[in-house]
Image (cartoon, rainbow, N blue to C red; front, side, top):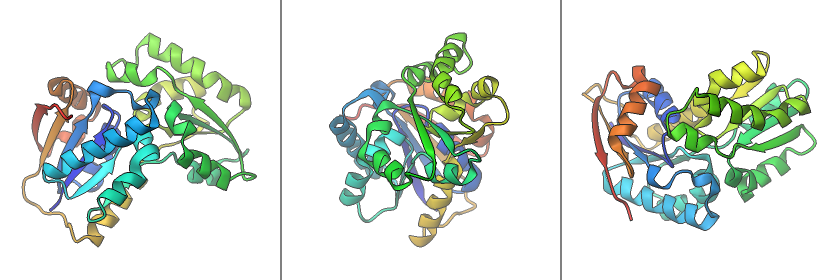
Length: 267
């Protein structure tokens, strides 16, 4: 049985943890929310890369044998550095599901809702360049959405209003497929459906990320066990608040695990 570390700039990575607990429940998990520094999407690339590396080292010191970088911005800016620095353990990142979207779109018009940093990253640009000619991509930065989600305002009128503004250009472009390029955004799925309707295909890569994690765990012989499992919820801001939101947002996923919480300072 492995101890798996999952980190994000805040609560968005709970969408990935939720999928991990569904697909691979018989492991220990440490979830680290760097909420004191959220959102990452508007910080400098160098800062994100350095901070992400610091958090990964902290998680390994806490006993993690595998890491999931459950933040699109951190993946885009830091995953190569992390893998180079920590070659001995499996490290899984998250990326916008551009390739699945290309296969699923019927009219070849695909919207990508992501943070500013993800959209301007070299990794994302290279991904789009590799698929040029296959589809028309309409990127849209979701400025202001992550702070609202971090405050628990998942279905608040102000969140819906801001989301409508961000989705307007995508609607005007006639997209038939929307890629969610931030792990926070799946929490907005009901609002997105309300605004865009049921015909739009929405791509969230959480399931694919955890499939890759399970493959890597098998490769490194970190197998599941029937013994009691724990989830440690750490926050650099307020672990009690993180726990409250986790119980609200992913209640069923937490049922079979013992929960521990702690607020931590990581410099």
